[in-house]
Length: 333
Length: 289
Image 1 (cartoon, chains in turn purple, brown):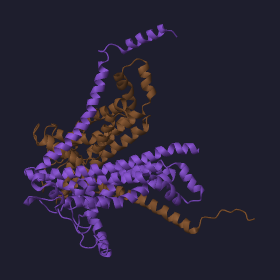
Image 2 (cartoon, chains in turn purple, green):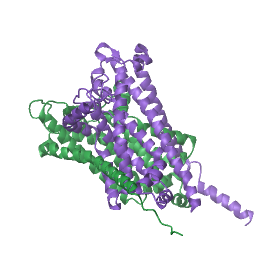
Image 3 (cartoon, one colour):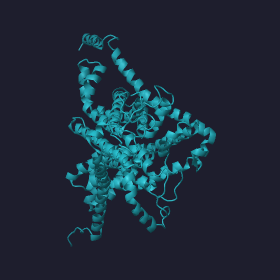
Image 4 (cartoon, chains in turn cyan, red):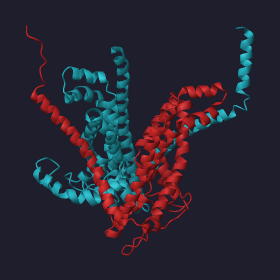
């Protein structure tokens, strides 16, 4: 190969690349798309700043601390303390996790480890279909079915287990428990899907080792599957929590929308999302009320940001775990 | 010398195994109970409302008389979701193309991915608030309008479209790109004629799922598109939608209005299910997955 062919190749290359004008579309594509991507970041930043600006009146009137830590929400008397809303959000989401996570993890375990092969696919699709039902339809169903049908059971439970804190006492129709139950149904698909994905990555060597040592199926699950997928399950649970905190319409319809902290889980409450959906119509003409609701939105936004951040950390850790174990498994084999 | 024998699994361990497996299977079936109940109640309450008139007349707004049908709600949902798709898909796919073809593992790409993730987690009502404080209060094109509802829905769809498109684009084999470059095609042609067509079926799945999610959302429409009885084809006016019809009829102490809510809910769920199943079908037939 002489220098001549190299030079010819250089010419050829220049010819192929074409003139700067011919390369213009490429540059346009690159910079156009880059601008679009940066635009998304700017949009979210703008979004955050606007929320802060619009909720400023309430923070300067009440003070951030007073808004966040006063247990009193009476818009008609211009009193805005968001504690009942924040506590209601946390109570209903906590109930959702307590009910939803065991079921979601069980469904994931069943599909990945226990179910007959024929059942796995249909089961997965059915659990996923729960996510296809719109929020407002769950609300409608909860309002006309869950609230009336569950009331006797709730009353029995409240009477029988009244010695447990936050259980005994009167049972109102719409309440924290019903809201939590609806939220549990709504977060089930996402929690279950993430648990399932993580469980599918458990190296079969781990499982086979457990079985070879004489473990029963359940012992294998307890010793090999659960420890390996723990952080993935936690990530799924946190993502579910993020959903539950922000869920609006279904909760608005079944929580009762009373701006107080109920004394038991069978009493009415309110959530940050529900207060916005429910009061915004009347608040449009009252700047302070509107600012208070936008501030509630801001708190909600920050809360979900925080929860989703933790979820992401868990999921990343779970993924990293699988990446590290893969070469190790390869070496063993 | 005694022969080595394998100790049989003790009956206590066997019982624990059986019990635990039973509980896991039982809880899994518990997960399906709400699905069955929701569908049962939708059919039981909703079918009664459904007739030809139900789909071809507008709500009357009358409390005691004939509540009318849900024509404006169906059309409103279709119009607003269509516009939201037109907004969200080009942006979402564009960002995904940038992430895969240009951004890759750069710092900027990581922050774009981070912000897309943040967007996924933002509650839908907060998107509604955002559109309210930027577009409705500023009075651009009147106060409440269908297109503002579309913008709120598009914000909701954007992260779903981007993430799913990114996953599919990453699956396009690099050999296809290299073959295109080797034939002398510039980058834009490679993206437009090779990469995007190869990824299209998979991206359609993500887009359909995003549409299905947007169609069922109420919270972003509450104070953007608001609520109205009549049919309108003008996206600059207030617009009715199926979720809003359900939401505003639930609390009414009037059985006929509640019946409309059930009928609308059944219609909405059928629409969403068709979209979801279509998405899954395309996903299964797509070569990249």
